[in-house]
Length: 365
Image (cartoon, rainbow, N blue to C red):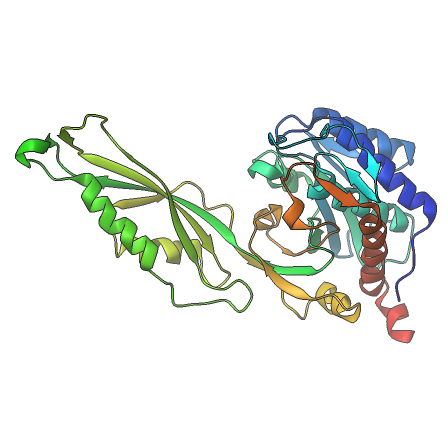
C-alpha cells in the first residue's frame, strides 16, 4: 500500500532542492552545497557528519548488530551546456516543473531519499539500519566521492542509489572500460614507401573492434559494446609514414564478463597493446530475489538494465538504482523535474522500504 507523505516532508524536499539549484556545485566544487546539506540536517536536529564534500548520517537507533541499508545520491552537477535559455541556477516553477541545473540529475532523487531518511529516522523497530549519504564527484567518477567515503562508513549490506529512473528498478548497470591502444610501426618517407605504417596496422585493429561480438549476451544489458572514439599518430607531416598510432576505445561491459576477461580476449586478437585507464567502473547487478526487488515488484515496479554508469559501480555490495525523474533529461538544456515526480518518488520509496524495514508487519497485513 502506498501512503502519501505529509505536506511538510514534500515542502521541505522541494525547498531543499531549490536551495541546491541556486548554488553552483560542479564536480570537485561542491563545498557550498555540502554546507547547505549540513545545515539542513542541523535544522532538522539530526546529527550529521562531513568528510570532504560528502555528507552522511545514520538513523537514531543505529544498531551494529543489524544489517545496514544505504540511501545514496549525489549533489554535484555537470556544467550547463550552451543550449540553456533559462538561468540554470534559478529554480523557477512553471507548469508543475521545477527548472534548474541538477534538478533531475540527481537533485530530485537526493532530496527524496533525504525525506525518506527523515521519515524513518526516529523509528526504533527497523529491521535494517539506515545510512544516508549525499556524495560528491559522481559526474566525473571521482575518487573523493562515494569511493573514499565508504572507508569512513560502517559496514553496508545493500543500498539504493538515487538516479532518475522514473521510479522503475535498474537492477543491472553497464560497466565502463576505457582502453588506450598503442600500435608500433616504423617511420619512413611516404614517397618511397619506406617504413611500416602504424596507422594502417591500427586500421586493422579498429576494424576488429568494429566487427567483433562477445559471445555472452545479457538478457538485461544486451551485448558488450565497443566504440573507437579517438585516433592520433605521432607526426603531423604529410610525407612521413607514422611510426606510432594511438586510439581510444570506449567499452561498455555487461554483467556477464569481468574486465580482465574482456581485456584478455581483445589482446588475443589485435596487433596493438591495449591498456585500461581504470578498472574501477565495473558492471553491477542485484538478484531479482533480493528483498528490495521483491518489494518493488509488489508495488508494480518493473526491472531493467541501465545503459548508463553511476556510483553504483563503485559499491562492493548489491544496490538498486531507482529514483524520480527521467534519465533522458539529464545533462540537457533547461533541465527540469516535475514536482509530482518528487512527491510520488517519496511515496514509492516509503512504500518499498516499509516492506523491507517492517517485514513482519507487511506479512501480517
